[in-house]
View (tube, rainbow, N blue to C red):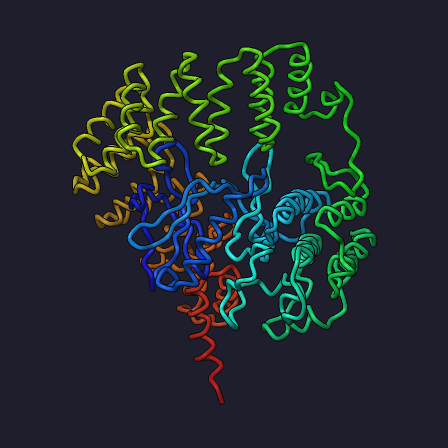
Length: 599
């Protein structure tokens, strides 16, 4: 069984905070970026797959596939590489949950379900237009941000396939799909598989959201295959009587056995679902395809009547921009970028620059950097610096660091430090630590802290911990916590647990859990189980599951198994396995071997 990286561990320069999830090919961790003050999702290929040429190819294929997709509803790839012979991918961390977690509370209200489908349909059609199939559309791969203005993101292109690539990326007999949502042609391998397979999977996802049940529930793969290939298409209104019968027609076409009978695009499916709901999508207005009618655009000033302050702000920014206000153009770009409309943001940044706004130069550079266009980002950073924007010095250093130009990065960090940039002090400390200069790193962390940089406190604690100075590490974790660094609570809990101070570890896990940290809830459950307090451990596992921690499913299964509740253990093993937990699959196999022995 492969070990999980603990909080505070450093891999490829990324500082691990906690495990986010685990699938058949690897694990995904929440980590701190190597240079930028942000969290990232770091996906690592497991050792078994790393030693398998096909596994490595599939994993790297994901990075290549997604890196070419620039869409506000597709999770962004930041970087990729190899460390200790293990490939890794760094991508946007989505602070929120997934639709699968929402469904544990029952069906999703039709307007919200339609909004989710519409957002994901836009992302899928965008991918299809660029020759990419997703091939694993399901609720667990649809993330919803925990922000005031929610965003929906499509993730896990791990088994996506480029349409014009005839080389199979799956082994013979290995089905890397989720059978609950798999199109018939994916199962029987008869005929070509195209974008309509994703239409089918999106339709299954819509059905699940509307009813709270799977379209073809089954306890075995053979039952699921029979359902998709032969069973009548289910009617959602027969399960949820509150639904309009119009949804039955939508699902009937989306789940048609013959691809030719389905909607021609995901946008057409979304448009039909919107019509069936009898209302305009309440969350956002988006383009759903050239062959679909667009909802009416609001008249100027109408946003003020909707109660959406962001929309009203956009309305006034546009009015000011129309009058030539360069600052309003810049602010409009910032608003659109925050919303995820990167093309619109770039357009307004460029207009603001032409109109004389210098801050827009740096923001355009940041946008291009996040998109992976390092050459143009560097060009705008340098223009911003020449125009007097000091913050761009550190940004340029970070860009050069990503490119591997450590000397150039250090030079610009030092220039930024010379004009008082505390963040650059922190980044220089990170660079020196990666280079192995721990004394220099510690010195700059301390200078950054003295200059007001709070992120450097936890990094200093981690450095001291790795050096063996546990007392110093604990001191800086506590200082980081005191200034609001919630992540340091988990670091401190881990450190205390390693030192044998279980009471102290429990205290900090409880504090982090009270703040909604699902990983700490799971750790608290593990600690309580070791103590023998199975009732409270079970309670925390269930809370962690509700908060989106998938590892807790397997842990709950283990607890129930130890208690003798084999049916309950089997149920949670199956749920964890359905989410891709390879260890739960093995545990389930062992359990079934013993409770259902072969004749």
